Length: 211
Image (cartoon, rainbow, N blue to C red):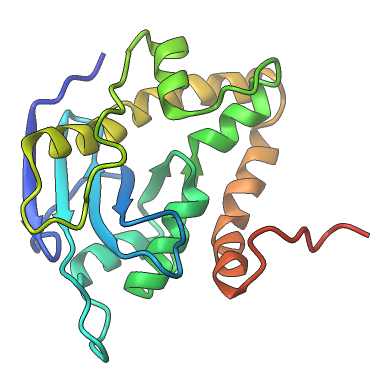
């Protein structure tokens, strides 16, 4: 079972030369749930080794180009699989705020919906409790992520959201294979950057595939 070994807080970007490996768990904290409106405040990343890198994003300046070039380069790297829970939101936020099309992607929430059809509980807290026996605290979920100085409680909460994604992926890979849905999941993951573009362009609730 992974444990949090270390947190490293960076301001504005990942340091040059940071290598998180071929599969990187990623989450974001924002000022709200509208990716086109609400500011990106924090990006947390882990290579699955118990070390979490947290990138605190500055308040954007009007007319300034998107920042965080090292982070953006990793997010777009085709050799690095980006591992999310509910990737649709995070990918849209990162697209809007950093101007980067995130790919390739794996989403544990989509994987859960494809194989755990016996339940409607697909939140990260539910998955960690039911599949890993870990009880995640969500006490800091609605705290002020735009504060200039984040508390240790906020940082630990943010780190916990990426700490278990690699192990969840292993569980879901096996379940997807068992149910014959690996290729279907891959197709869903591949569509996520386009789904994020639709959200940002004004089609968040409209099913363009319906009659």
